[in-house]
Length: 231
Image: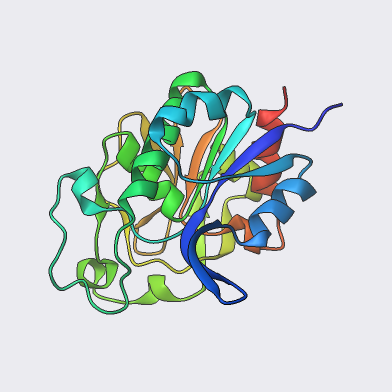
């Protein structure tokens, strides 16, 4: 049986080759390893013009929206803050536009989609939702910025069927879903009720998780995604 082809979005970062330093489309190897381990063939998607998105999707059986810097707040109706702080990276509008278009097209075409960390924010914004821009200010603590934390999961959800009703997950984050986008439902929560995973109703597999399943020992969620992506 042919392996499904899974596209993984890439980070935009400065990279060095010898004496040259250039902007590059790069990806942590953990994404490709986890997708390959689950039985799919991973390919990397550089963030090019959104007009190329339909051509991408014609050659893909599934899409992973990977992590990265925070989504430009202008995309969900907020102005950028003057005092973002030294620890908050500048938005990457080129990547944002590409990935929002990719998420919208995958949803419309019924292509299986796994949105990870920043990717969950992209999916929510693509569906018309908004984000909490600073969790420490919103919830009064910084526990979401620790690498490991527990989540409670709806057992009837795709996420719950893949990993169970409670899990220790890996992934620090400063932002989260505020208003859910159209068709999205919350299916996992932190102990303070911050949404940790979402699913799109009526779609074969459109799931967003706040954590990084590709870094964990349990590859069940990525296996469920790859199963949905099989031709």
